[in-house]
Length: 308
Image 1 (cartoon, helix red, strand yellow):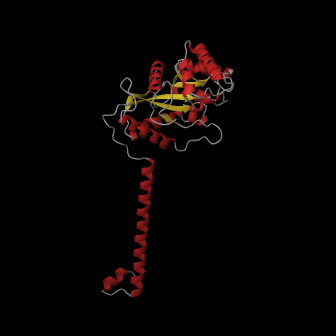
Image 2 (cartoon, helix red, strand yellow; image 1 turned 60 degrees about the horizontal axis):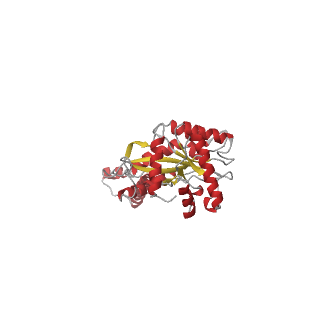
Image 3 (cartoon, helix red, strand yellow; image 1 turned 180 degrees about the vertical axis):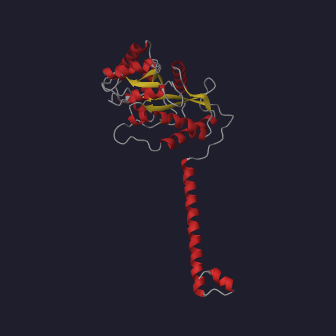
């Protein structure tokens, strides 16, 4: 019999019935508490995935991203990462016709020293990007610090000649392989009128063998952009033409990067908004002359938001 029947009769519930209803009530409360706990955990987890958007400070100058790519051109076939990167920079839903700096290997048999590599270098030039020097050695991607002075000097001279033949003028920018340099290599760059450009943000996608999928790419870029904001707040990063140019580095030899290039563009825009960084009306550079001029200025100042 239910508790309602006892109430209608004006009777007192027997102990057995009381105990049974106490159990039912306790179970109901426990179920509700478990549901509330699950909701709290879900809410906290959601906050970890998508933290609230920070207020954009009106005092901060807007940022514009200067994209750079290392190690190419890639010779992988039939899916060619360099070609895919070029395709997505030209046609994407974030900002079409983005222009970038490509730090290339001009004589490596596995890069620009091959017929396909030469074809890709010409395509990169023809599509309005900046060709810059990464390595001019026929031995490929060799650490400049471990080359003799004579070999380093020859590799720089060869790389400059190769890019001059492609573009009609000497390159102004260099980025050392493995981002490894010292006072001797920097003196060699200066002797060849090359400006060394590093980066504010790196996708850390230089590894192309084995596991090279980035599962934390959004949180990684968010962390880097938070550092960029801190550097801007203390006026450490330069302002050029009314915006703060932020150098971002990828590797066009990485097939994961190539297949996710448009996603990376969206991440840069979305996470900038999330950390409170104002963006320029065009968040990416779109003409080669501005790209090269701003890159040279950043290289000459030599101050960056993050470590390479």
